Image (cartoon, rainbow, N blue to C red):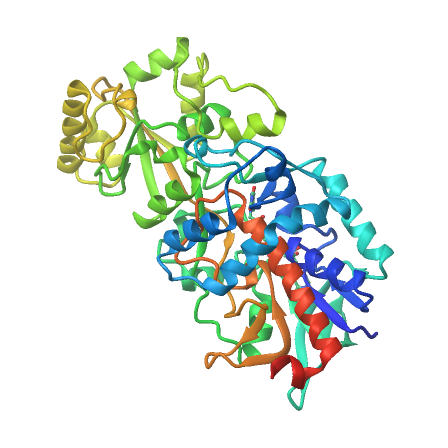
Amino acid sequence: MKADVVIVGAGAAGIGAGITLAEAGKQVILLEKGDKFGGAGMFGAQGLFAVESSQQKAVGSSFTLKQAYQELIGYTHYRSNTALTKAILSKSASTIDWLSDHGLKTELVKNTQEVHQDHPKVYHQYIDKFAGFDRLMASFKAHGGQLLLQTAGVEIIREQDQIAGIKVVQNKHEFMITCSAVIVADGGFIGNHELVNKHLTINPENLYSMGERKATGDGIKMLAQLGADTRHLGVFENHAASVISPHDSKWHNSTIFTLTNLPFLWIDQSGKRFVDESVCYDFALWGNITYTIGGAYYFILDQALVDELSDQALEWTDSFERTFVSLAHKPMTHKVGPFPQIDVDLEEAIAKGAGFKAEDLAELATKLHMSQKILMQTVDRYNTQIEQKEDFDFYKPTKFMRFSVKQGPFYAIKARSTSLGTIGGIETNDQMDVLKADKKPVKGTFVAGNNASGMYDTSYPTLEGISCAFAWNSGRIAGESAIKLLNEGSESYYG
Ligand SMILES: Cc1cc2nc3c(=O)[nH]c(=O)nc-3n(C[C@H](O)[C@H](O)[C@H](O)COP(=O)(O)OP(=O)(O)OC[C@H]3O[C@@H](n4cnc5c(N)ncnc54)[C@H](O)[C@@H]3O)c2cc1C
C-alpha cells in the first residue's frame, strides 16, 4: 500500500488533516484503530471555539483575534507557545466555514457555562453532529482519501533521515504503508494507565477519565523512538468533578449528579474547606482545584438540608444546566429540585461506595479517615460564617452562604478529579512539525490535537471549545504543512 501521507487517528485532528490533504489532491490514508471514526470530538464534544468567525460577525460581535490571543496568553502566563497559539486562533474563523462547507455545520450559541455569560460568544455548537461527521468523512472520501478502520499505526519507518513508511496492524495482520510523511493525531494517552500514572500528580484512584480510551499513547511512543521531545506530557484536561461508584462504572444517579454541581460545603481529604465552592460554575477552574487538592473532595449535607431539598425547589443553578439547555434550545430554569426521592438516592450513593452517612461528625470523620478535630473545626467555622452570611475564608457569594451543617445524620459524597484527556504531548511549532529537544525537526513528521503540546500551560483554559478548536485547527495546519513539504521538498521546507 502506498500514499503521500499517512495520518494516525481519525478524531477531529486527523479528519481535519485528512480533508485538507485530500482536497489538495494528495494521496492520503487515514488510520483508525477503532471501528468508528470521530474520536472524542464526536462522541464527547458538542462544539468548538472560534474568534472573528462569519457567525460572530453576523451578530456584530466585537471580540477580536487580538483580544482572544491576549486572553489566552494571559491565562497561561506566557508558559505556552505564543506562535502556535496565534496560528490556531488565526485559523479558527475560517475553520467554522470550512467545516460547514464539508458538511459539519455549527451555530454560535451563548457560552455554555454560567460564569461566561458576560464573555463574548465564542462557542460554535455542532448542528446534527453525527450526520455532520458522516458528511465530513464522505467529503474526505469524495476527494480521494482512504479511511482504514480497525487499523492501528505501530511504527514509523525512517531511512536516511527520510520517512519511508509506517507499519500498521489490521486484524492482527501487520503490513507497511509506504509514504513520505506521517501526521500523528491519535489523541494523546489518557487510555494508557501506566503512562497516565507516571505523569499524574494525584492518587490514580482519584482520577475519573471521560477521555478516549483508545488513545493509548501509540503516536507519542512512535515519535519518541524517532527522537521527539516528550518532556511536556503531563498536562491533563481537568474538567469539573464527578461522583462515581468504585465498583459499578455504569452507575449514574441524576439527583447526586445535580447535587455535585452545586456550591454546598466542600471539604478536602483532610477535612478542611479549600475553596469558594461556586467555582463549580467554571468547569476548568473547578477541575483544576479538584486536581490541585489531590483529586478528591467530599460535599457535605446535613439532614435539615436533605429534608428541605426533598420538598422544596432550590433557586440555585445546576452548573451543567446551561450546557444541556443550550444543546436542547430550552429556557434556563435557574432552579433545582425538589428531590422527593433524595433519601433513596443518598442511600443508593452509599450502597455504591460513593457516599457516607454518619449520625454525628465524629463518626463521619472516622468513616472518611480524617481527623475528628479538623472536621469539627471546619464545620464550626463554616456554620459561623453561614450565620454571618459572609465567607471570610474563600469569599463565596452571600447567595450561597445559606445552609449550615448542624443536624445529623450527616452525608458526605465523594467527588473525584475528572479528565477529558491528556493535552500535553510532543513538542511542536506553529507548523505542527515534530521537534526534538534541540528544537530541530523530526523530518517528515507532524503532530496534531491531543498529541501536541504548546497550547496549554498546566491546565486547559477557560475559553469554551478551545480543545476542539485546537484539534481541528492543528489538524488543518499539519495537513497544510505536509502539502508544503510534498510540494517544495525537504530541503526547501526545512531550510
Ligand atoms: C466527554 C468529552 C466532552 C468534550 N467536550 C468538549 C467540548 O465541548 N469542546 C471542546 O473544545 N472540547 C471538548 N472535549 C475535548 C475534545 O473533544 C478533544 O480535545 C479533541 O476531540 C481531541 O481530538 P484528537 O483528534 O486530538 O483526539 P481523539 O478525538 O482522541 O482522536 C484520536 C483517534 O485516534 C485513534 N487512535 C488511537 N491510537 C491509534 C493508532 N495507534 N492508530 C490509529 N488510530 C488510533 C483513536 O481511536 C481516536 O479515534 C471533550 C472531550 C470529552 C472526552
